[in-house]
Image 1 (cartoon, rainbow, N blue to C red):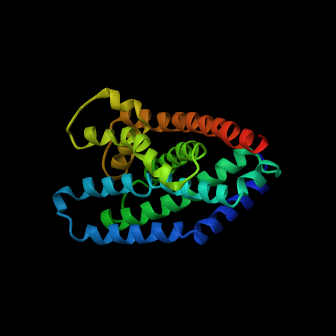
Image 2 (cartoon, rainbow, N blue to C red; image 1 turned 30 degrees about the vertical axis):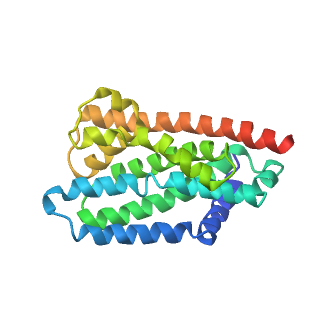
Image 3 (tube, rainbow, N blue to C red; image 1 turned 90 degrees about the vertical axis):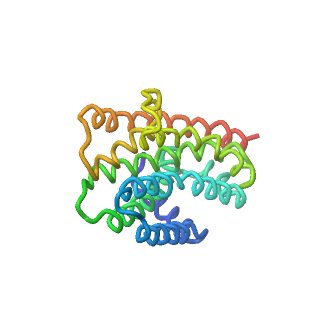
Length: 235
């Protein structure tokens, strides 16, 4: 991987996100959520705050990557990338880094507004950025297979619904170990642990499992790039 090409690719993606109003949408939604915090009952404040962080900055990367990929398909940018010096890892990590930065900054703003400035920043940033990266890569794998945003919106629930299931454990509706197979269980553990205490077993599981899921997500996204973009461009 060439770090110079990766850096330039990240800057280009950030420009695209400004151009396509992705950054604007992220900021508006974050501001709206911060306004909602003023209406929350203090007894359930952290639970709702974590829910909003979980569903907004971390999960909206799926929709944002879908929009970016479809814009690039429509402008034939992906066809140009295939024959450019930019490698698959550089392309994918550029998307991960640029969207992850936006997700993390928005999540930090929400956390500071809703919880205050005293929390574990390392756990918080790790949980949000790694989750954003996983969801972005899964979103790319989905977007590489379709041609229109309407098709993408239809398949979003198929990906996002399973990832939301650990909320059942989080709100005490279930206590199932099976949900620990989903990476978002680790996400919720780390976000909660950044505000409160967390058991050693949950901490170790979360810090180990999220990177493992990131590796599998990257492998799936790279396969999808080769299968659905490179082969399609050459056919």
